[in-house]
Length: 157
Image (cartoon, rainbow, N blue to C red; front, side, top):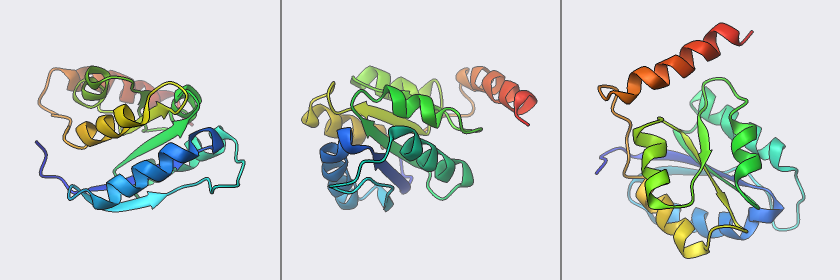
């Protein structure tokens, strides 16, 4: 169990708005969360998922937030968008094991959920579980994450 107090960003397109609202409320009440930032969209806004995914990932890369949750119809588009930002690792999660391994094996800072794929109670549970995981830089996974980071540094201009 973590002792970390997280700064969390949450973003969604219009296909993930309802889950975003529920997760923002949950995170605001969670004692493990120090700060929750809403990166949109509003109830009647229609911002394309890549714009939200990129903006949230940039906030993670800058250090404005420690981690983030992104929600769209499937979670896939948000994860793809977020992964375009150097230094960011994002993935979709749909069960407890993938949620756990996203952090412990891959040091992902962003999880993406699909409102059309994952039920709301499962989404809420996954976010609660995710807050407890911290990457261990002494783990064997650190070398593997390092390969990804090294490649990214060599190839980004």
